[in-house]
Image 1: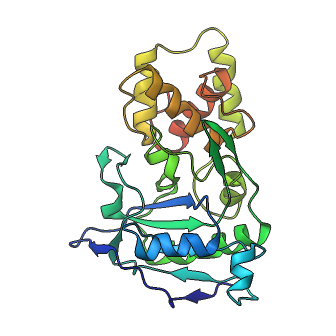
Image 2 (image 1 turned 180 degrees about the vertical axis):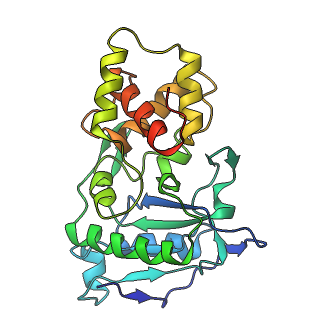
Length: 257
């Protein structure tokens, strides 16, 4: 059951100036509920929604027995959640997106990442919330439901590889590749991967920002793998990763090659 609570309005947001909502960006907080709530309402950043972990101590200590979603910024307003970002050929994703922050205690210890699993109840409520949002904003397409790492791969890892993107797709949310198309591209690419310039075009065609150097290329591959091949997200472009990318473009952009 989706319960929306608007008890805690954020202080930092501005107006969209009439621009339609076209993307939905999913984040993790990397902090408990109480800390996340302070950060997102009082410290110069914000998001439209905060989804707690029902078993996390600071949420229980706040007196909540049921899992509810906290709306911090109105959907018609621009929240400060994506930062420097790019999707589908345009920068400044904040101006045309809705941001959902999920309480998850992911950690980055000097480049060593720990990604805890999301609670099943969180995923269930997330699905209901996204369906609710998309019903009001039909301009959000399948490929426009993305992670923070997708739109800012050079600096972000959220929501990490534990978010069940394939499960969301099965629930009617977001994009996923067809196994048959993936297999066909894998067989083709065993003869050799496409030239790097063609792979660059394929990433941009799907929505990702250009990679300006080798490190950025690896960071983008890693973000893509966390979304679509979470079993291995080392950032190395291999046959399977390339096949998934081309299968996605074939399905969603009518430009697979």
